[in-house]
Image 1 (cartoon, one colour):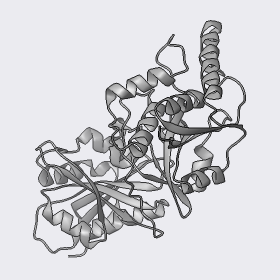
Image 2 (image 1 turned 135 degrees about the vertical axis):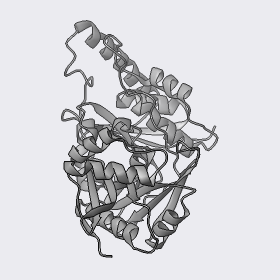
Image 3 (image 1 turned 180 degrees about the horizontal axis):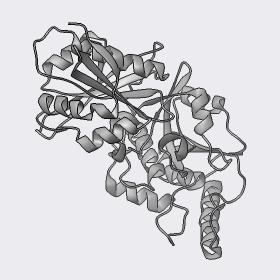
Length: 366
């Protein structure tokens, strides 16, 4: 039976809910979520019809500033096997991701769903990880990935850690680097907050603050890593929107302390705009790079944000972003080992006209 696959519309919500209810007993997408996702530019929902009746759907999520798409859901009405509906929906989802310029399509699938796993493996998906007790029924999830363009991949042995709160991106990048260079190190929430307390530069008058490059480098050195700083702005940082004279004074003193510690530790500092070649050379030397980016290009918030760059492959970097947009249905599969084209990365790697990077490596053994 031939299937017609087209973009879903608001009028299809009843059909989508019926497919969801018939296909899954738990972890169902709600009617409200379907409505929200159909309206969202970062999501594409495709519906398959046979003889004018909805038979299945596929939903793909797109993260801004990323080269990866995620197959959020693929479902069909119960019926005879061998119709090819699942394969056609998967191919349509891959095409949608390819047409949006994505390098990879990722997905999560229940370890108990043998038929779906077999389909994905036949279509060239490879296993990149697993999540125990992922679904409401207690089943674990396999994480799979398919390369849509190019010959590279995004697998990395560098551990990923999701930030617990919205102001600890820098410390989480440090923890991931520590876990890579010091295999016995285990990231956890207590260490996350402790590193944030050690590295933060913002006076807590209206809420918790974040970190700047000198604080991150000083703390990285204190914990046994080598560090180098490249920052385009020579003076105190992140003061543009600070109106309180007292808060500015505290921030300036905190940053003065970090600069003194960096100087005492003989951490190299280059006051200039970093280039893509700086990042590429550091990665080629076996180092990792913590880079300041604008959160606006990634998740729509005008905030400074730190990410960890892991590898350089062809025309894109691979990076861990410690921030996961839970409200948009993201999981760590959307934020770990993200491929980002070089030009897109360099466009997002600035905040308020400033560029900053902290290059981290294995420290000297005592």
